Image (cartoon, rainbow, N blue to C red):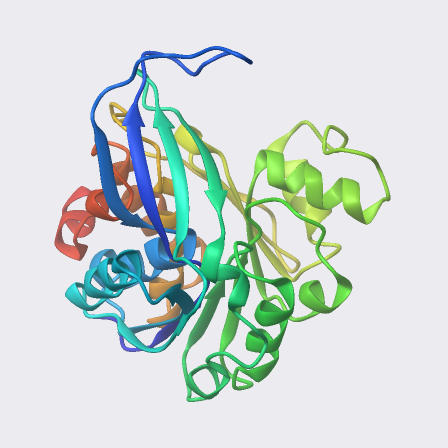
Length: 308
């Protein structure tokens, strides 16, 4: 069990998941497999990962609708011991993600934000200010809510931003971020936005160079590389490559969220960033061997057993 508490500020969605033989081309209709209705959303996934796989006492800050989907999501979070007292229930419908998973386990996702758009800068500030060790956020909720949460954290607490999905990052958000977690595409978008470029195709090709470039914006970076693991970079040291264990992928949905949640949990327990990333990469690899997002989150015991 982690000694420090994690507060996750972010989205909660119901995932409507369908297996497809391949992703459709424009204008094409495909027949898929059975439809699953599962708890998800980047924020909720990361909260479950911090609690179940990371062993951290965890609180979730967000919003769901006053509908059956909202109840499903809150019950799922409570089932993993996540504190949901800072979750607002609003008149908007609960967020929904449409998820297609192909035969190689690769996913394509479209999100209808719903109540997630109602997360304002005042939501959960009291929880964030109440001595967490780490505040973790993503970008499926309004950016001003994330900035407010990071600013409200105690001086000793670290802020971890998973800049996904890609969007422009205002200077106020970058200034309040201690650790930036991005994949290669998101990293290019961040760097392109910083330099005023259109699109995210510019930037260093080498992951280590990309991580170094991001250090001009934030003190520490975890650049995730999928099956190749991640690169960890801090301003006062050389970048470190962290390899992922080789696994057979079933469904990649939520694997990055598992990595982020476990990373936050291990940082809350006092691990150095590289050490935390090593554990987080193992947890993310285990998650892709199972279907779904929250259902695929491993336990802390499973993560410990799989760690090198």
